[in-house]
Every structure is written in structure tokens, then in C-alpha cells.
Image (tube, rainbow, N blue to C red; front, side, top):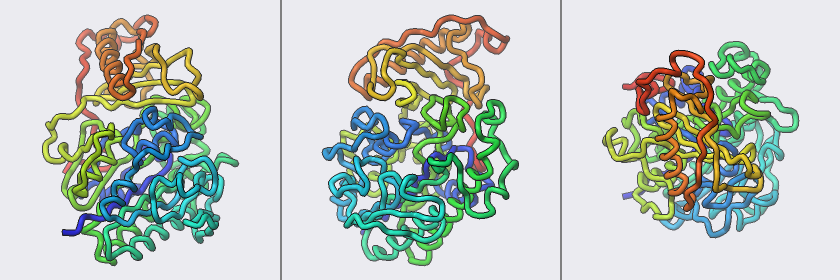
Length: 453
């Protein structure tokens, strides 16, 4: 029996809450397939998140704890595992795990077919997409950038329709164009969406969203149209029922509300991403309401394809949650933050808890022995994370239990148990913060985009 094909569609800097009426194709995929309603990246910046997606291992484990680090040649990626099982493997788009441009063959993570660029944001703009092939020759792909890359993905599927294949499609949108700090949508799309919608955190905190949201949403809309074309092409090739398609993003976007740029913070705007899958093993799976990490995607895809999950992967397959919502699963997702600061945190269905190594160098130091509690958010009652409860006497018990959990998760992921100092005390500001009945567990967030079937 032929194993299923696998396609991963990765966007760049896409917020979790952009899924819904704006994205009918992704919304349909989530509704009829499987959707993780609370999915978080293990690291809210490009290279570390991408290293985790390729290996199923934490950024500090692979050594790619920040941008500018090369994925070590000894790391085994999804391409290695699928290739060893007889799959044709291909990579299209942004890589961001190499030391030079074009990407040398030995730094391509084991992918056999290659049409990529290490830093696509610097080799292309909205209507001029330049990538490099296996011989490191430049290739100009015509059309709007996300369309051009998805067209290449369709060609790959057509060329390999008679053998099992694994394809990773790494899009740049809805990332900003670095050199001009804009979000260039296709002609006419920015005007269509400017002023139509603003997430609650951005409405409250400002940032640059009032200038950029129209272009950002226009990019998201075109991404969804491209996803629809890819699914249509698989249908016309007779491959749709035999292909697992996973859609997610490397991190989100807080539009300069939490620091001086767009990510690298502990907030859901940076961490939380869309995650939906369709195809064999996922159709009819419904909603996974318990928090998961995109670190869990590699082992999930391997198990769904009938391949063994390597013991060295630190993520775990969430397929058991499709069969039983009460299956054994961690109550929290662990994440790391670098470059802006050396931070560690956990996110449960109810709480966000975060600590920072105040004396660590945010660029040079991958980890630290001592952290200080910096943030505690009740993400059910304060979904936009506007009220920091760290240091409030009313939440000392909650913070203490979450602190112990975070220490355990750091030790499991990094092999060393740090010290986390409590936040300095502060007076309660309102009755909600002094409620003695506050508990760690609470109602889980509603699914986004559509209701549970």
C-alpha cells in the first residue's frame, strides 16, 4: 500500500487570528480536517522556529537559538526521514538555516529537489521572486511572490504524481518587505482590507498596525487563494485523497506593540500561529483544544505516514488527541525567546507564565542559570494580554505552581534546572486581581474561524 504524500505549507509571520472569513480555503481545511485551536511556535523568530519544524527539536538543542546560525550537518530533518523511506523530497522558498546565499548543497537539510533562497526577503520583492535551483543557478519565478512559489509547488506535485513525495513550501508572506518596512499585497488588495478589522491587542496598544493592516490582510487573502489553487491542483491530479497537507506559520506578528519590531516576545501575538491539517489520518479529526507546539508537527507527520518517530525528537505526535481528547498530553506548551532577551515560558489553556534572564546577552547566550519572573497573564479573561499579574499577591499561588512547571520543562528540554526568582511584589489594582478563588485551570479558549462541528 502506497504511503500518503505530505506537503507542508509554511507562511511567515502570520497571526493565528487571521483564519476565518478572510481565508475560506484554510477555514474549510480546518473544518473538515483537523485544527489545533491553540498552536504555538517554540521560538518566535525565523531561524529557530524553522530549525524546530525541520527537526522536531528545540532551538537550544540544535544550536539554532537565534537567526544567523546554521543548522548543524548532523541534525536529521524531515527530508532525511522521508527520503530514507523512499519519498521524493523537495523544498521551495525561504530556508533561513544556512550560512550563505545561494545555499550550499550540504546545508540544505537533506532535500533532494531544491528551489529556494536562504533569505527570500532579500532576494525578492512582491513581483520579482528569485530563488536558486540544485545547481545554485538563479531562477526568476513570474507572478506575485506567493503565487509564484505555489505554482512551483504544483509543478513539483505534477512531476512526482506517480511516486510518494514530501514537499516543504516555505512562503514569505505575510512578512514585511525588510528594506522598506511595508507589507506589499497584490495590486488592489491593500485597499480592499484597510480599515476593515483590527485585533483587540493592536486596537488597544497601537503600534504600526494602523498603517500596515490593509497590506498584511491582503497578503493573507492571496495566500489563501493560493492554498485553494494547490488543493484544486491535487484534486485534478487525482492526489487529493492521498496527500496530507499541513498549514502553519513560523511565528506571529505584534506590529511593534510589545517591543521595537514584530515578534520576539512572550505574547500570543508573537507565539500563536494557525495550524490545520487535512488528508489521510486527519480528515474528520475536528478540533484539538489542548495547547500544542509546532515542535509536535514533525513527529505527527511521520506517524501519520506510517514512519517511525526518532527518539531524539523532543516534540510528540498529537495523533492520539484526534482519537481521544482526554489522551495523555502535557497541560502546557514550553517556549523559548531569544534576540530581544533570553526568555522562557509556558502557555496553558488558562495561563501564560514567562521569565527572563536579566543578566544574559540576548544574542550570544542561548540559555541561563537564573531567570526572573516577568509576566503572568490570564489568557481566558484577558485574551489580549493587557494586564500583567506577575508580582500580585492575589496570584502568588498560581505563579508558584507555574514557576515549578516551567523549571521542569526547562530541565526536560535543555538538560539543566535553572533558578527562577519571583517577580517583585506589587499592589493589586482591581478586584479581579484579588479574587482568592483564582485557580490554575479554567475554561479553554474557543476555536477560531468556525464553531466545533
